[in-house]
Image (cartoon, rainbow, N blue to C red):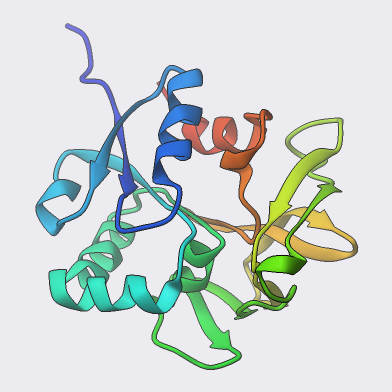
Length: 194
């Protein structure tokens, strides 16, 4: 008997969730959009894309998604947050402080690279994942200012941690979905096994 296909949820509140879907399509991974708590049912993992974290929090409050995502994480299901998604997953948010899910022990500073006009494409290193430099797109990106005990730095750029992991939680301060390199998404999809 065949095992059911493991489906990855993509939070579709705002941000470029469609680009994450396209990346998963390239990898042959099954996915569905998540807008409501009920959409998390049957999902084996979750991607939380970028966008505006304060706007996403308002939606979370209206829909009850914050507690639902925390329960999802407590079940050991993988969650991958990019940019604003990483901010929402953090234990501490700076500049200014705001509500968060406290699912990964990092302190993160919002908009630390500057305004939209200061967005950039850089090269970073993820030596455990790939032997070449990875293109990283930073758009009003946060900076991880503190990495807690038990948090593994998977990727760096310009001497800063930009890709971190703790247990089933994975966070990037950049946008891997906006490049042609599927390395980061492949690593996340591989967490689901079979």
